[in-house]
Length: 236
Image 1 (cartoon, rainbow, N blue to C red):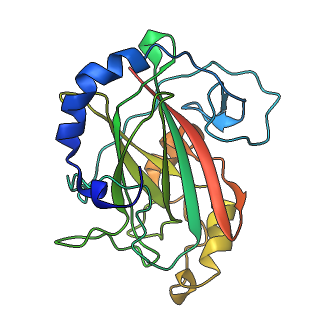
Image 2 (image 1 turned 90 degrees about the vertical axis):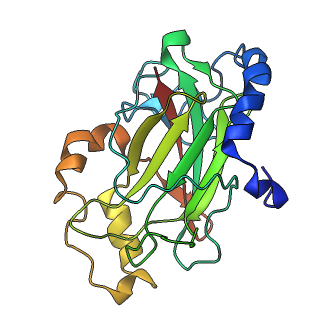
């Protein structure tokens, strides 16, 4: 969705409208080149962008690991793709495809997806601030795109991006994405991240990463002066 006045569209209004439009769109079947990480951390059959394919066979889609929203979730209803608000950091593009596992891995159209994460200094927006938070509505192929930055580290936790998927106005799936540790160490050696001394092992100190990292770590690849990753989110 374009970065304009529609950014302030209410998610609740979008979900109400999706009740009629979404049913027809859900008839589309999973398709696309292999290479996107699915919920098992393996290539999935549905990819928002072409990436290097893996020879490892994998299910078309699997359920994403659920996790808590943490203390910083804010329901802002701010529909936009670019959530940076001009903040410094290494650019990161996140391409998501939402599929319904219980419906044969069909793409889920008209679902709302929230993302939020810390800035380069490890701080979340609070109060009236809205940086690094946003919502997108999946298209007819279940896809949406967020443009953001690689998050900073904080509080002994593995750096991560939180997300919620709202398939309708009554249900939601909440989880978080992690990053490969070698990528983090490279990013944290650059500014503005290098203003703080990064942990030697940003991921391994977090028990949540040790439990779900193999499932929820993004397969990031270089993209201009930053990175990009695609992921298929499987919901029940």
